Length: 266
Length: 215
Image (cartoon, rainbow over all chains, first blue to last red):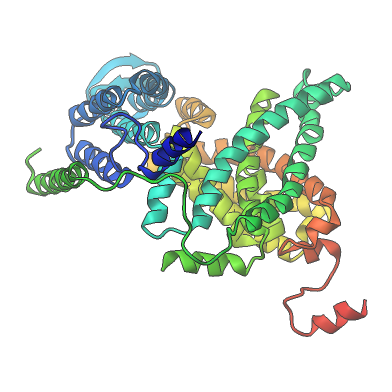
């Protein structure tokens, strides 16, 4: 018994590791790296650089072992956001070289170039943001932020929000089914469906608001409002040479890209 | 240090406000989800912002709006450009709450016009400035269609967004009104703007202390 207890204690004494070199990169270093890649993608004028950056993000996701789910998410984004942005621009941006005349609108070379550039640039930003949250869990990010002096109350608000979105979403679905069973119509024309909205959401939201009181007491019992430094059960891996190197490379890349942009290399 | 400043700021709003903010954020999301589930052609994604603004004050409401859009932009980054709208909803709801707009149903209904103006007019402005008039979402298709019919791109944005936002904000403020009516008095008394809905004078105003004690 004592040996297993000791083993558990030893596991908590070590900083948490996720067993993957990319996943274990310090969240702050990760922010620097991804921001640098996005900046590099956006500084040059064409659509090739942001595309390369987007592909690079996918590669990083695979190195982190999260490639499959990341690829799914990002492909959906490309289809839902990127494609629409591109098509609208291609159709509506006016230009000189008409490729396909379509009545009042026309597809022009300028439109296609503008569309490619704009949509791929937006998608590079989306890709970076999505990658960051695919690799860094919210808990690790907030822990890293707390370590550099962000209030534990801020972490509470963020983490509790994610939890509450999941919980309230589930409760709302349960209440929707319950109210349907009681005869509230959730199908039919728009007005019928809109009327179902109130009896579903009002009880869910009221319960959630009333529960805040208990939550306040529960956190008070755990000395949440204690002005001193909060301890945590898990700790992040300490800042390593890899993290420093990553930040240095990121800074160099941004400097080079911005300088290049100013000097007109691209 | 930043942390202590945030703590001092929150203390001014009482203990419960910090717990109301995550609930408000969740309400924003769940409102949107249920609207999708019921296949309603509106977003209903600012209920939490307005609710927290109306019961806790403008700044907590604005915080709900800001964090909601930040979380939303994890999966759909262009959303973040519109965060300022949600922040404005929170601030305006705080002001409206303080002057008692959400106590009367017809004033609540009228307030939807103000929210719709922010959402529609300023939303269209952001679409034009940030996305060059062509953002993403259902509205973009309408804008595209209007432009194809020969309308100016900027006009098309205003024409498409204003009515959509009125349709969105009317049910939003009505449900906020219904929820506030349903909040139990023992919870209301602990919320920063609860005194408005309990018909009490502002407890922070110095001279009203005697009046409260007398009543």
